[in-house]
Image 1 (cartoon, helix red, strand yellow):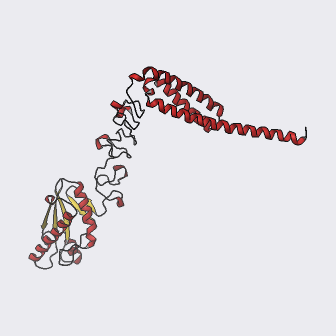
Image 2 (tube, rainbow, N blue to C red):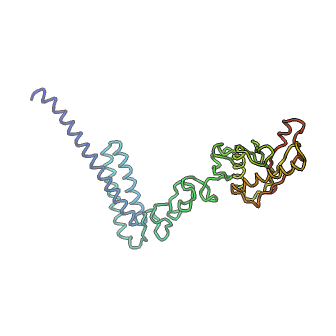
Image 3 (cartoon, rainbow, N blue to C red):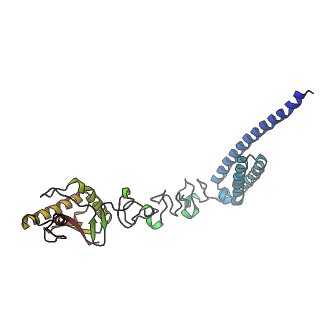
Length: 307
């Protein structure tokens, strides 16, 4: 035997080992797939009820076999596959003895079809056989937010105390209606017990009741608050400075309050919940002797008269 022959022998043996390993790996994968199919079959036939111990054993050993196979420990994998097959065969024997007395269970979740509210979808016995995707204890078939956990009293949806569409867990102002752009906090207003305070004034054309465009975002946010708080009634108050006659300022303040009310109605607020009053220059909050004071007196206020 030559030196070259001696070197070639270990290489040949290594190739044989590798080929055998690949064959074992493929064979075991095929065997696991076959066992999975058989498990699904007897599950549908009621094995979880007729032979719960044997079925659970077969299922567990199949999982262990898959783990060992993934780690390339084919010997241990084969041991688990043998145990899985033995347990599956035992489950079949029990199944043959009791299947006539077992009601059908199409989805194989252990809840018989007559008692299963979701007979075609595997679920949990405590939820009448229905799944609970978000794990909040509310079955998906009655959960209004099946992908977000929420309490049963809120129909499975996360709490949204202020009703602004942003759940409390993500809302930086969970008790004040806000906007998504402002992380759930009001952007243009602040709501107190008896007022809606404006962070930005509503401007009108000079001497007229026409609302300028920069006031629209403020009024839209107010409308959102009022639509969420359906029981509130609000009085819209128009105020002016003392420039011009008293009667004209009274008319102007009333017209501006009416314009604001009309805009809120266009946004879907119930007209029965809104009143508009013009006070003219009679309720100043600053001196009318300066331009700054007059600017402060020209304003629109929102009083919450009932909740």
